[in-house]
Image 1 (cartoon, rainbow, N blue to C red):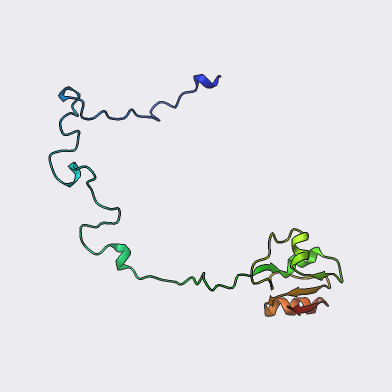
Image 2 (image 1 turned 60 degrees about the horizontal axis):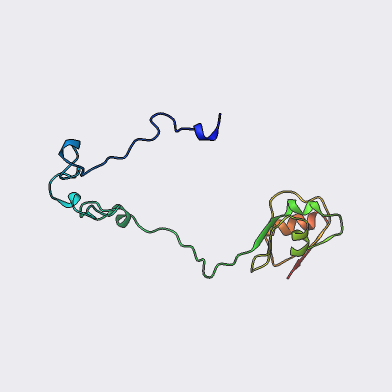
Length: 148
């Protein structure tokens, strides 16, 4: 097999219609557009959500939800089970998590520790925010919590 012999599968590509090329082609004069009307005109037709003048579905349905991106507090989140990667007695902050490859970058509002999973190591965790379950699990494992 050579690259110059490759062809599309039969029926995969159909030749384009050559319209407006004389009466003998069967597609002359009106070029398959019929006589007059909106669809026969250049640029004719309606916009995608036009429903013939009735109120479009997109305007009939209510707007839902709210996403306050402008004032959102974005944290880098880490679950307590990820802290098992460190040795007993280690101090863990955002810098150590980046070095260990657990997180890629520090978000503007800092680090937030979530409570998913189990913690078996005794570590000191320095973060901007903690969930109640995360604090409980860190203290249960014998570690300490420092809020920045």
